[in-house]
Image (cartoon, rainbow, N blue to C red; front, side, top):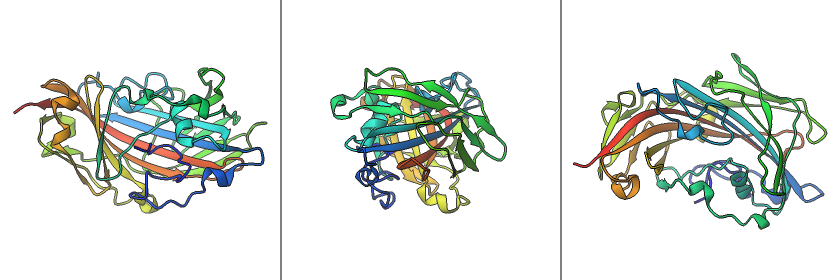
Length: 325
């Protein structure tokens, strides 16, 4: 399964031709004279807890990129992160993203996959990657009509001599991230990377989410072995970016296993009953969270960056319970 969020050496945008045609340059076409390429990855994430249980967690933001406090959801939790990586043209960009903590695995639209708690720790041949340098871009700022957010530079945790440098993240988990909105990103530049500025349009977050005939905010009960119908309001006002939008649904059990299904943004999708069973989610009844995400990936161009991408991931989260009938 190809990581949807990685900047593939074959295609910069959504995973596979099933979602969108590939027209971005391959890594080999953008390498500089030294045989290196620079890859920029910007993530904008917002998770809204619809449950009346304030202790509900936000698995989507539980990453090393997340701002402090992002793992505990009370209302809206947000995170912005940016990495600008210089790597050998022989390095697989997907493996590089996984190593620096920005992987995103998504099945093709209309299909599902199972994510185990150890999915992010799969073995990787580090010797094949070469060194990855996370570049200092100077002062990096994100702006919308209502928000101006300087991002904090953080040293990347040591991974032997393989990865080194800095990345950028929002300073807390409660910053305002409006959607839909136009986002602008600017840097002052440094001796490593030219000054840049680019923009990307975020879609609306999921709204009017129902599982069967039950509002997600009210908590839902899923019958083991029975398909679950997920409904939401399609983003009819998404403009040209709507063609890039994918809605995906995660049902995550207490033991950490998740069923993930991806759909085109039509307002309706079905989680197969064959995945809602004890072999996947554990002994029944099983407590779970159910998260509905709308995600959009937008390529960007900037001086000194060969491959650039902004990914928006906007989600709503509720409580679920899987029971045997």
